[in-house]
Image (cartoon, rainbow, N blue to C red):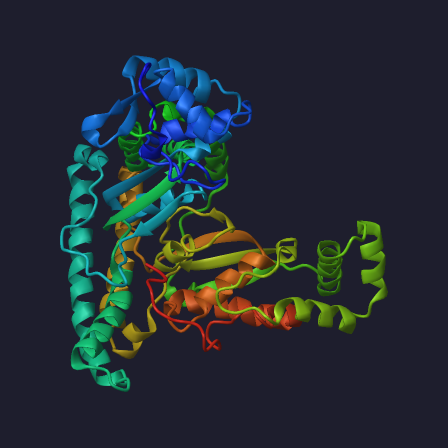
Length: 510
């Protein structure tokens, strides 16, 4: 654009204020403009103008003024300013939005766990009815007709059972659920149907297809792709290459050096080899012997927790040194510290987060929960750090209470136990396909590290009246334990149920 007058109003929302938005530019251009600021005295607007004047950018008039890189200059420019800039935080200013359809529930969980900085919205089995045939068939099964036949038969029988449970539950719940004041026939039927969806889906497998929308910055997306390319699951590795191709249309240079991680793959291979050498035979664990569980593995000492919170609150709201704040805190009685902590919490409303001081207390959780529950837990958390076991049929399974009450346990258990049998057979023939035989009812082993700040978020969300019964039971159990051991700290964790200002609803789980 040399020699031309630059009209910045096509790219920034104003020319004379200190706060403005930047638009009509490719994501990588925005990342580079932001990167300039740490090494240039010029403003973002001035740096953008300089790029335009130096002809580093081309303006596509036909596209409504959207700027783009000249393809040959792009490689040199990005190599210098993005890849070779010296710190990868530059990549956080470039964002891509990706639609991902028809992947398995197994792969969607791996994707969502690959990087905590990504944001997702996923198809909900709680609110939508899956269609027959919407399940993933691993290409690896094409080499073994017997295993493929077992696998396909299971997926069809799972859907048959799902439909049978759905019909039985709708009939049962129509007679049992109380009508709400002013509820129309249509709304009542929709509520019955949604409740039936929630419980019938427990017999569907991890092969069931799902769709999701994803947003991530360049740095998080790059790390996500590395994790997926290093996955034990071929579907995830193929997904990574498809994502790389499409994201590369938006932020190409930021993904330039995406490769599988030898560290992840070699370490996993070594550890799994050692585990296999000491592994006992697979356990056939019936539901009655392996019910769901949730417990604290580690809680801070209550007295010490109160002391550390008091120290942090004093530092945050005064000019005391750490030594002075600690001395004052330790001089207080338990009751005095409890009153101070209570005062820091009692004004919380449903949508509030506790003060940052509550991020310093760390808890460790152990959960043995259904796959349906796990897929909810890995979403809608903010700062939980998980370690999760492989999908298995060896740790028992959950029977939804309405299934029991409606007298539908027999067909439910037959399908879940048949899935366990086929899972074991296919694991011997085609290990890559076996995890897709695990049902939503089967339990997965999970451990988590979480701060008290995050526990407040999870308990408040997951014990609300709108929360799904399975995950609500987990956090009610954890809340009960927290009340016993840390009474004042637990007092305001559950706020939604008693907050008249809270507005309900929304898809809290999948």
